[in-house]
Image 1: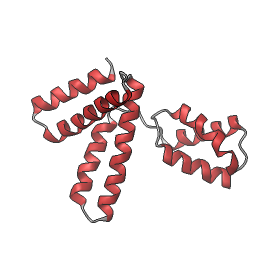
Image 2: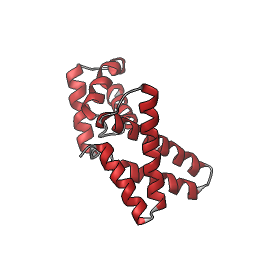
Image 3: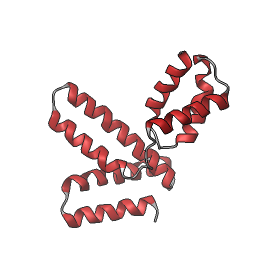
Amino acid sequence: MSLKQRIQDDMKAALRAKDSARLSAVRLLIAATKQREIDERIELDDAGIQATVEKLVKQRRDSASQYDAANRPDLAANERFEIEVLSTYLPVQLSDAELDAEITAAIADAGATSIADLGRVMPQLKARLAGRADMAEASRRVRSRLSA
């Protein structure tokens, strides 16, 4: 089953269960996917939908941290719930040990020795991780390894 079909099925299940919070999050994803298809005049495949989900999750994380800073735990909790729902459409995330192993391999493959080589490491790492890890966290870890 394609990811697009799974999302449609989840929307129908949320409608039947009268789960308005989950329904809202799924509809948000459907709207973002359709908007991207219209803007780019393409039919999104599973990889394109995953990229859209990653973008939405990143936006929700940023919003949740801003709500926490503004002392609005109710709104932050809503954003975290949406992250939880949207994350079900992403591949299983790598553990810290697996992420470190991928970073080590990418640094070795690129022959990186200093922070100046970051531009050679990150494209390789992005291709290897493809939605299985937060690239901001991966970049932070690569920077700390190369600067040490």
